[in-house]
Length: 461
Ligand code: ARG
Image (cartoon, rainbow, N blue to C red; front, side, top):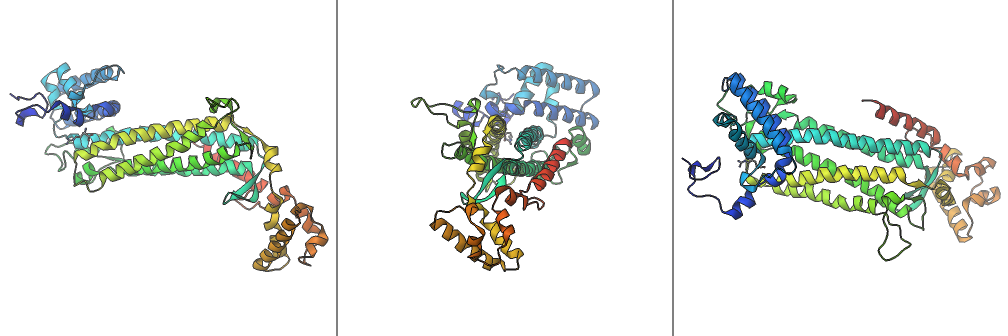
């Protein structure tokens, strides 16, 4: 008889120190894997049956027992003390309490090393699908916003300096395409995670004739892992996910930054709704864009998760070491953080007021300078020369406090004889936009086509 009451207690004389028990336990956070752990075990029991390691009655008992454990442990107030160590041990222990020694057959040929790896893949599949749904939802908000404000003109910036006018819809859709890549990155990650690891055992495979292809099919994987050492060592799919999540947050944070600046009195381009703002405890007049600031701030937290796991995995000797138990908290935290950030950001965007008039009013006439240079190029002047001519023209206008749009033909011609009457028509924001109907450009025609593309993406399943 084992003197120590743990499933691995046989070779031990003494129980772990209470401190060690607490330190070692992952049940506090890996209980989230309950559902996938049970799903994995149900499939594994079927594979054991196919390998004649369980008879039909035993299989039925185990399946029923696993279902009972699932129901019991799913209750949020179900106590799962540290002594249970982790979700895998907890399920097996309870199963055996419920159905007796036959429960002890379930772990035949299996190790927690391949089990936890399977659970994480299964958990990831569900999480990725949920996140893609959230991304689609935000893309829908952006598309609707672009449609609603299709004609609104916005000063476009580079280096945070006014550069060229763009359509607000074009700006909103820029995030749509970033999110489209984010969705694709998550799908790619899944492609590389889509390998069934059971049968790898602790590291060397199993002596039992487990039909791995059957298991892959049962659990919805397209193939099986080709190397048991690699399989139980692999956390690449979590790292890739965290990298993808970090990129999503990087994207959101940049738009947060713009919108926060734009919501200031100095810009006044947008006004966040009361629903997604908060006030100051001291200054009664304040309305702060906390929703966006928090999304921006939580970006650091998600990057932290990526760096934490990369650092944990660095130099972990093959195959499994307990270091790898540290993979779960950063993963869960990052998944949860990105999920709520996508939702909050969508809410803040959807409910904000877009002040189109104010945006257009703030377009600096100097933002049309490139169009004048391009005009001279059309007259045959090399672009470098045209750039210099218009540079001089801008310098003169600035010195005389003149807007580019107020210049007369004679004033233009003082810089180049090549300016004709038609050049004056260029000194208009909408004209500037309409010159950029190149595919992917900010011209109204091009943006209308872009809207079409975006609609088609959201309409496809
Ligand atoms: N709780 C462990 C983890 O999350 C499960 C795997 C334990 N494997 C082992 N050989 N001790 O990593």
